[in-house]
Length: 137
Length: 146
Figure 1 (cartoon, rainbow over the protein chains, first blue to last red):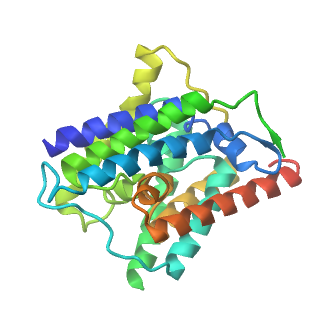
Figure 2 (tube, each protein chain N blue to C red; figure 1 turned 90 degrees about the vertical axis):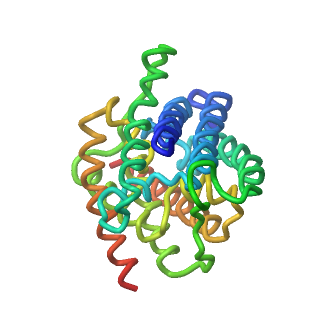
């Protein structure tokens, strides 16, 4: 059942990303173009997602555990450390340069295979490097 | 600053955001997991998630198939206008991967899930990556494009 619901969640995620316009690098960059001709659409994506989750998480996390697993897997770290700050800053630069982030890259694989697969492979190397550096400290 | 009214899609983008939120709720209610794309992908290329391999792969396959619903069933075009190519595109991919791994999350994990959980770390992360993203685009536009 866990596997079924992971697939359904992914399917809805991909659909939502496409509907929201997140698969289009030029639209993402339009949102980050705050000092130029600004397209605020992505603020509405985030608003919709956060609003639904804020309401839903409150109800779900009242439960002792999820339906198909023994516990909720929530991050325990609360400290804003150097890795978080540095990593987020670097991520933002890449996001601004290409207008792509990990979710939309996956969702683009069947839509724009050439760009998406190329981006994914290089991004995976970055993920691996970043993870190793984070684990070392 | 001007508002780009031609490309502005508040209703459609908000609806897309609601679907993204529903996807995250399903993953939490069923499996107890945060829906963070970077973590789900990196879980596939590391050896410390032996038992969490298959659900991550299925989530990714689902995400790949999701846009096809829009394209084939609802018959809606999915726009794609690239903003970078060659070296800049490769560099961006490396920075996106490296940064989200070092910063423990990206737009979905920190931006959608973390904010809804009132995580201080996610709040800081979103503020930072939106700021550096805006600065990066400002520099690109000031230079007259890439």
